Amino acid sequence: MSPSQFSSAGEANISTTQLENGFIDSASLVNSEKAVHELLQQTPVHGTDDHLIEFSEALRTVAKALRRAAEGKASAQAEAAEWKRKYEIEKSRNQLLKQKGNSSGGHNGDSHCGCIESLGNGYTTNGHINRCCGKEGICCEEVLLDGEADPRNHNKMMRKASFKLSWMCKGEKSDQHKHDIVSFEKGDITTASRSSKQISLKWETPPQTVLVLTKPNSTTVRVLCADMVRWLREQKNLNIYVEQRVKEELLSNSCFFKFVETWGDDREFLDLHTKVDLVVTLGGDGTVLWAASMFKGPVPPIVPFSLGSLGFMTPFYSERYQECLDSVMKGPISITLRHRLQCRVIRDKAKHEYEAEEPILVLNEVTIDRGISSYLTNLECYCDSSFVTRVQGDGLILSTTSGSTAYSLAAGGSMVHPQVPGILFTPICPHSLSFRPLILPEHVTIRIQVPFNSRSPAWASFDGKDRKQLAAGDALVCSMAAWPVPTACLEDSTGDFLRSIQDGLHWNQRKTQSSDGLRDL
Ligand SMILES: NC(=O)c1ccc[n+]([C@@H]2O[C@H](COP(=O)([O-])OP(=O)(O)OC[C@H]3O[C@@H](n4cnc5c(N)ncnc54)[C@H](O)[C@@H]3O)[C@@H](O)[C@H]2O)c1
Ligand SMILES: Nc1ncnc2c1ncn2[C@@H]1O[C@H](COP(=O)(O)OP(=O)(O)OP(=O)(O)O)[C@@H](O)[C@H]1O
Image 1 (cartoon, rainbow, N blue to C red):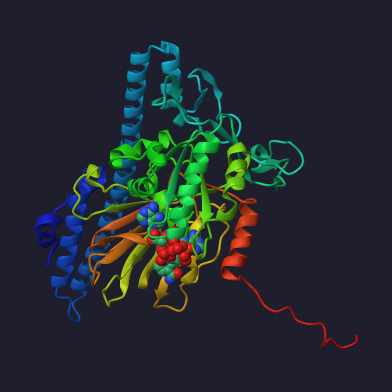
Image 2 (image 1 turned 180 degrees about the vertical axis):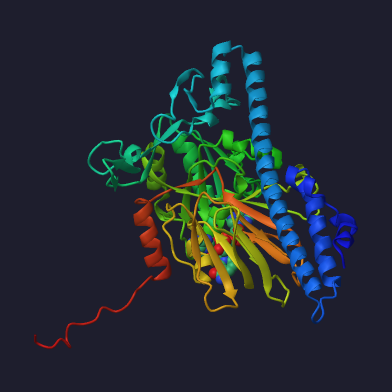
C-alpha cells in the first residue's frame, strides 16, 4: 500500500496544510480517525514486509495526532458552549433589569450601569447600591438584583435576604486569607501560618423565604414537615415554598396551608434561586443530593435535617428543629462550601459546539461503568491535555471531596474533608495490580473517552441517577463547577466531618488495648 492509498481513503483525506492551519472541524477529525482505524484493520501487515510495517506505524502516528487534535477541539467546544450559556444568563438577567427599571422608574441610569457592569456590586433591600461585597470575604449579592413584588403587600418589594460570607479566624482579627500564599522574600520560600479556614455566613437582612424539600413516602417526614411549615409561618412569618406533591399532602391535612407556594414547571423553578433565602431538607443524604440537583446555578444555603439512616451530610437533629432554625436565621452560622463537578457529555456524532448536551452538576460523583455489559470497560482518561491512563475494569468514579465518603470510599478511595479542593479519580475493580486511586487538583479538566475500538458502550450516572449511554467515540468532560452547595454546619466543617465518619462509619473504632499485659520496665 502506498501513501496515495491513504489520501484516497475518503474521509481520511486531510491535507497537511489543513492540519497546520487548524482548519478542520472535529467531525472531520473524528471521521478521519475512524477511517484511519478502518484502514489499519484492512492493512495486511503480514510477515516480513518492512515497508508495510513502517507504513502501518506511520498510520498509527497519524491516528494519534488526529485524536489529539479532535480532543483539543472538543474541549474548546465545551468551553465555548459554557461561555455561551453564561452569556445567555447574563443577557436575560440584564433584560429583566432593564424591564424592571423601565416599569418602576426606580433606578436611574447610573445604577443600571453599575449593576450590569459589575454583578458583584451590593444592593441593599431598598434597591440602592450599597457597596461592593467582593472586597471583603466571598461575594454573594448578585441574587439581590432579582426582586419581585410581594403578593401580600403590593407596596413592598420582596427581595432575597442579603448575607455575607467571610473566613473565620481563630483569635486575632487579621485578614489571614490574604496572606495565605507562598511568599518569596530574600530568597527564602515560606508559607504563612494558617488560622482556621472555617467559612461563616452572616445575614445582613433577615431571611424571608424558605424552600422545604422532603424525602417522599415517609410518614415521619410528612408529619414533621406540616409541623415545621406551620411554625415557620406562625412564629417567623416566612414565605414557604414546597414541591407540588408536598403542597397536596399539606392541603389534604388542613386548609391552613393555603399560603404555601409551589412552582409549575422547570422554567419557573429556574427563577426560584432568586427568591429563596434558605433551603431546609428533611430526609437523608439522598434528599441533600436531590436539593442540590434542583439548582443548576447558584444554590441558597441548605439546612439539612437528619431523617435518614446514615446522614453524612445531614448534621441537624429534627427533634430540636425550632432551636436549630432559630439560631440559623439569627446567624452567624458556619457553613461548608461543598464543591460540585460540572459534567458534559460530548457525542461523537455532534458536529458543532452548540450541540453539546446540557451540563449536569453533581455533588457526590459521576460514575462511568460497564452497565449490563459483561466486557471490561475500556476508558481513555486525560487530565487537561495529558494522557493519564486507560481504565480496564468495572469503571471509574470522578468524585468531589463531599462524595469521597460515598461510592468512591466503597471503591477504595480516600476519605477527604469536604473543604479540601480536589477531584478524586477512583477506579472500580480495575483489572490491574497497581491502579491506586488518585486525587487531582481542583483546577483540572478531566476527559474520559470511550475509544472507537471499545467492545461495548459505557454508562455514566450522576449522583447515582440519570444514566446516560456513552457510545464509542463519545466523551465525558468534567471540571469543577462555579456553583458550590453551601450547607449549614451544626458545629463547624471539621467537627461535623469527623463526627460523621466516627458515628456514621465507625471509623477506626477498636477496643482500647488494656494495660494489663504490660511488663515491668
Ligand atoms: N457501593 C456503594 O457504596 C454505592 C453504590 C451506588 C451508589 N452509591 C452512592 O449513593 C449515592 C446516592 O445516594 P442516594 O441516597 O440517592 O441513594 P441510596 O438511597 O441508594 O443511598 C446510598 C447510601 O449512600 C449514602 N451517601 C450518599 N451520599 C453520601 C456522602 N456524600 N457521604 C457518605 N454517604 C453518602 C447514603 O446515606 C446512603 O446510605 C451516590 O451518589 C453514590 O455515592 C454508593
Ligand atoms: N424531594 C424528593 N423528590 C424525589 N425524590 C427524592 C426527594 N428527596 C429524596 N429523594 C430520593 O429519595 C431517596 C431516599 O432519600 P434519602 O437518601 O434522603 O433517604 P434515606 O434513604 O432514608 O436516607 P439514607 O440515605 O441516609 O438511608 C433518594 O434516592 C433520593 O434521591
